[in-house]
Length: 36
Image (cartoon, rainbow, N blue to C red; front, side):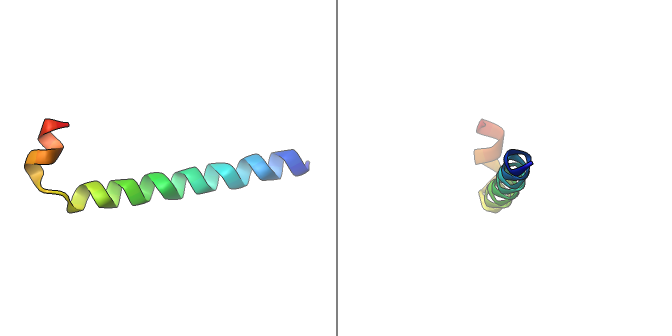
């Protein structure tokens, strides 16, 4: 049970990190996004 809770927390953390990355990419200029 504790292990499941830990994996759930890790998934939440990774999701938050992905959201932060998406926000950072949105702030970048459009040409950078098209190059990627």
